[in-house]
Length: 423
Image (cartoon, rainbow, N blue to C red; front, side, top):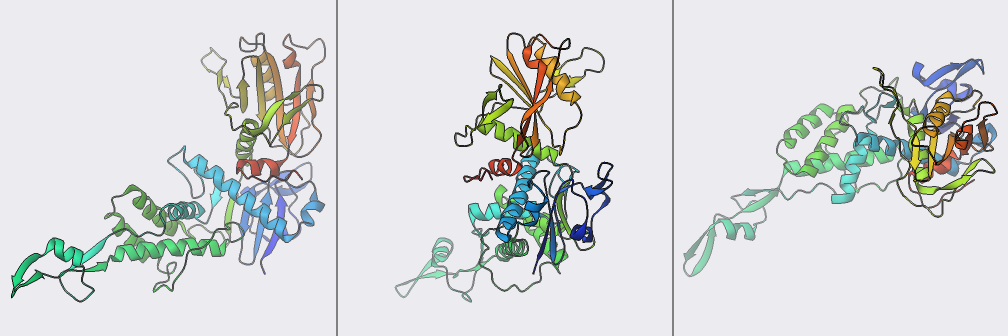
């Protein structure tokens, strides 16, 4: 039976977690905890067990983590896998270069999941590869194709009978069969071996005459050869995905383990927050120092964006770039995503963004709200409230809100799941 071990980014490495093949980049030393802690989000998959490391504050506390039932665990694992996969696909669309699961060095995957998704997307759209390519034979060893015979043969009248010569029969292309079988193998093999992550229906499978993984080099030679004979873009893309899958399969697996992870989840956190703001943000409750959201009236309006402001005329040309900026004409919102477990010091970056924009021409005669957006279910409140004589003329520059957001809720919203549990 497969053993599932759960953890969270920033947790102390102890117990069953210690038994996994962790690289130096998977952990860091915490001076506060005086111990090594997990420093990634994602999965390490070994023969009979999986280590699933979730984002900071995904679970309320360690007791909740330990007492989850198998169905909840399965749902959470699938959710995390799909969030990382979606973020990577969106990132790839903005860049030609990529490394296995992603185009940035902070991604790592020893299994070519991204190739699988491209192949499965082709299957959903077009079905199994069945190009209408046949080989016409001038013989009658197979069933005669009368349509081809009538179109291509000479008609001869003999003793009052109309005879067509030569007779043509049809034979399926080896290319057609081979690509189809490769496609079915990749889909079913991945779904079968990673059912905890990928809950998709497999394709009807038949017995193969070849062991695809044991004969990778032969498979690749055939795929390269067939690729040169294909001209339709979507079919060529399918063959490229098959080639990439077999080239990358098991290429860099560490000690028999498969790693599927991101070392800097803050880049995903920023995307989760930005989508949630654009979908569900309503207003600021100034009296209680918090942001108001309404999931039921999702808007899908692109308002908040990562915006660059040039602030420097010197040779350095320094600039600032708030994570989430929105100007509606009367009010400007300057928010910053912070993937922190705890905040103990003044966030100087957000403070400088607030002061610079609030006291600029942009902030003139406009309300300003500044906030740090953090993972967790802690109480919202003020990060900073300036006291005299340090207060600014723009009232909004005098305080910064600390807004905590439910990590699981944002992950579900990112995937556009209809049912969102706010527990």
